[in-house]
Length: 106
Image 1: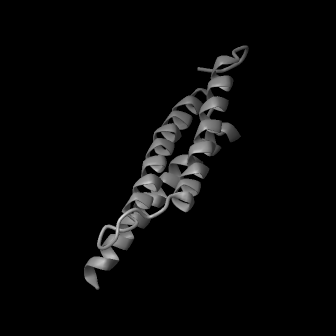
Image 2: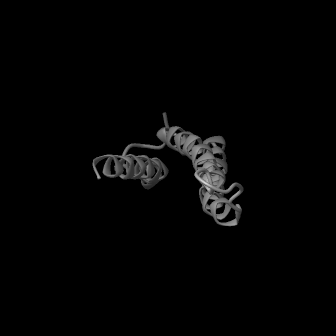
């Protein structure tokens, strides 16, 4: 399937990519501006919840970006670069799992 003569895939990809960038950046902003709410053991968990919530939304949008770019020809720059949001989401997941694994063995 090619995109010659069609503007819908390009527009949809642009919208999803812009929404992904906004949610990805806002996850860090939400982490920074959220004040820790309790005292004791659970202090600061709301900051982590805000960060991971926005990262979850960004992950869903990353899948949408990846899916929309599949209509471009194989080997094109758009198709190759559409995997970047998914790679960043995967790095976050593997990073969290690495920290959990490291804490489990220490």
